Structure formats: structure tokens, C-alpha cells
Image (tube, rainbow, N blue to C red):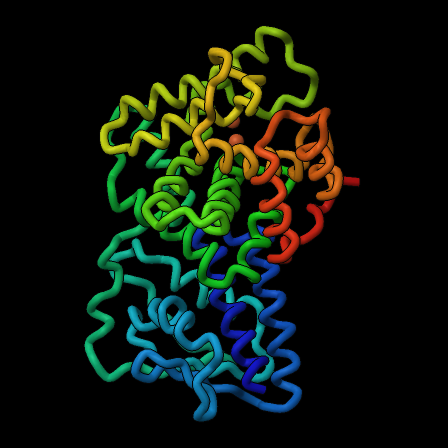
Length: 372
Ligand SMILES: [Fe+2]
Ligand SMILES: [Fe+2]
């Protein structure tokens, strides 16, 4: 029973982490909620209700500390704690919208006064007997997509990106990667056909941050790489929108315009005060092959930065597994053979191999749903 309860609360946390990154109707949020409901269905066969407490930084069910206690205490219960809550009781009959309500309240750190976490028919809360609720909403953070839009906007207009904005996004990304990797990495693989560049950007950031951690970059380097990944396509803001989603073939002129985005992105980032210099490097290099192929054109013997090589593996993987107006999503094996094969663009072979090992071992789902 403890394992089921532990898994259920980790899925609730996953839904929350996914919602911090994506919109409420994104598949990753829905799937985490579905997994939670399935676990609860099994739990409620034996129990009419379960009560989980946070006590002294430990998360406890029926007197036992849950296996993921530390993780839950740091994230889900820290968020609940900001609402003065240290106890959650879930009852048989719990509905998806009751879970959705918890998640929506917990991600809203912007409203003033903050929304209340009110009990519903199958969800009850216990309240900490202190004034912890006074701390609510001190960071004033907006949902990730809004923050990312603000960040891009700052850079496009030559302003210094607001530090807390950048830190909040990067910490959302690293939370997604480290908090519950097995549950959260799949969200990077989940796509919808009406995908936006923002979703692609978040996915590339998650995948490249995970790869950077696997290859052993230190924490500072991983942080800078996460930021560079979030900004790698910032130059696309200058590409006409209708071109980005065009379904037919590009004319030479259209292709030329699209190929400007790495240089435009690097220029925007060089001119934005406070952006680490890795970001313009990655923006500039992310479409250049290891053999100098791709764009923009570079002098012979150009050596790509490791961060650029990491981001381009994640970028191409994410792009290929996405259904685009001009081609369907590709299965993972096909992507692997293109990225590893002679005919494919020239990637860092070792990184590609490590990347696919990571993807396979961490259980990123096989494929997006391909349109009929
Ligand atoms: Fe790009
Ligand atoms: Fe990209």
C-alpha cells in the first residue's frame, strides 16, 4: 500500500511540475493525472481514504516515511506548505477535476491575494498551525510559458532579462529533469500537432539538460546550458510566423530567411545584457554540423562548443519526433538511424549514443500519436 501511495503522490507532483511547464490541457499534464487516478483506483479498492502528512520535512503515510519523502517534501509539500497545508486526505470517488483544481491553485503564485485551496467532496486538507500562509506568492512568478515569452521579449528588445525570470524557468526545467526523472522525462516526448516553438524550446531544454547531467557537466555548466537551450531559437522571432508553420516546400528565398535565425538569435543574445556568453554561442552553432555542414557557413575546421553539440542532439531529436505540417512524426528507431547514419547530418556520435541510451533507459515513450 505504501508503494502505491508513494507512487500516487509522485504522480500528483509530476502533474504539478508538468503544469508549471505546459498549459493545463497539455498531454503531459493529462497523462500524469491519468496515472494518478489509476493508482488511486487501486488504492481505493482497499481503503476508503488515505491521509498523507508532512512532519518535520518528512512525508508520512500511516506512520511510515514514504520512499520519495525527501523529494515530495522539497516540492509538492513545499508548495502546499506555502498555502499553510501539511496534510492531504484523498477519498474514494475522487474526480479528475478535483485534482486539476489542486494543481491550478498550486501553480498560481501570481494572484494577489493567492487563491485558496478549498476542500472538495473527496479532497480534504490539514492546516499547519502557524502563519506559513503569510509567505504565499512572495516570488510573484508567472507560469513558465509567460515567463519564457517575457524573457524572449526582453532579449528581442535589447533589455536585460529579469534575473528571477531566468532562474525560475531554469529551475522549472531542472526540477522536471531531476525531481522525478522517470515520470517527467517522458513529458519532453509528448507532442501535439499544433505545437508551438515554446513547447519545442522547453522540450529541448529538458532533454539537453538531462544529457548534460548524464555526461557529467558541473552544476554551473548545466545551468548555463539550460538557459542556452531555452534561448537557442530566439532568432525565430524575426522569421515571419507563416513561414514557421508552412506546409508546402520553401522557396529559396523563404529558406534563406529561416536560415537567418541562428545569426539573428546570436546577435540578439550578444546585445542582451546579463546573458551568459554560452547562449549566443549555442544559438549561432545549433544548426552547424560537426563537419561544418549546415548553416550559417563557418570557416573550415570550426570546432563546435560541447553545449552546442548537446543542444543540437536534443533539438533534432525533438524536431523529428514532432508532427510537422510538411511531414509526420518519425518513430524513434528511424530518428536514431538518421542521427547515427552516414546519410544524416554530422552529429557528435558519442553524444548521440549516450542520448539514445538515456532516452531508452529513462523510458521516454516510443512515439507521438501520428495523425491519421
Ligand atoms: Fe533552430
Ligand atoms: Fe530548435
